[in-house]
Structures are given as C-alpha cells and as structure tokens.
Image (cartoon, rainbow, N blue to C red; front, side, top):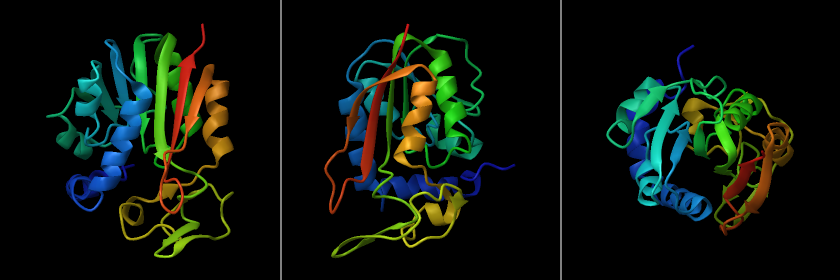
Length: 220
C-alpha cells in the first residue's frame, strides 16, 4: 500500500513552510520545551520532511529519523539522516536509544499501540519519549473551529480513519485522511509499553488548546 503522504509530499513541504508555518512553529516550540537539552541519540519517529530536526539538534541531541513515506524523506534528507521504516516494526536493536520524539503522528499511524510498544522496546532504561500531537478533545473531525469559537459535534469516540468531518478544514487531512484517538487511546498504550508518564502539557491555544504534549520515561 502506497504511503498516504507520497503523492502529496511536495505540496506538504510547502504547506508546512507557508499556510501552516505558525502551527509548525508552535509545535516545534512545544517539542523543544518538553525535550530539553541532551547529548545522546534521539529518534524522530514519523519525521516526515524533518522540519523539527534542526531544533532538536540545537538542543545537543544526535537526531535520526524514520518515516514510512519515501517521498517525504526526500525532503528530510538535507535535515537529518533518515531511513524508510514502519513505526510498528522499527529496524532497531533493543534499548539502544536515549530519546524518541514524535510530532503530530498519532493521527497518521495505523497502529498507535504497536508503535508505542516499539518505542518502549528501543529506548534504554531511563530513556525519554516526548509526543507532541493535536489535542484529542479540541482538534479532530468532530471539532469545528469557527471565527467565534469552537463547535464540538458528535464523534469523539469515532476512532476510524476518515477523510470527512466538519473539523477537517481544507488542509492536509482532506488529502491524507486522519485517525482520531481519544485521550485514553493515546495514553494507555504508553503504560502498557512500560513507559512512565511524567508530565502532560496543554500549551495555550485559542479558543482552546490545539496541542497535547506527553512526556514519559522507560522504566528499568
């Protein structure tokens, strides 16, 4: 099956730097604040075009990336070393990484729980995981943002992949589809994978938070 982003990769790279530039900057800022400085190897899971890699590198980390889309990785290669890989079957050894970051990927992955299980496997004991994703309560196919506020439609528990919904707007999700996952869907796999949730952050947004940040560490 062709990765969903392959036919949109060139458009998407321009979209991140153009119409979505402010959202990209907010996502990068949330990632930087959560991850902090470090000197080990950090995997950017679902790195896409690698847009966040320079900021991670400036923190001191040695960053490498994986993504399922070869077309996206053509844009990422100037920014970081990359490989084509499925997040649910990472070609990495056990307990070999100091950190893993994932930005805006839980709505793209076919199997979030399997990917989190792999994160738990490849992190060393004490290794850190930071996920910056859209806020499940306020961003999704059911959450329609209007000039006067936010209108929540039925559908919070509908977790299949969809291309339609009043909250999808006219951006990337109309092209690639989206998986909505509830907060429970998002957090419980971390606990099952042996990751200890250390902090949950909701960066301010208008009219409601757009992002949800999860920070976790792998247990011994």
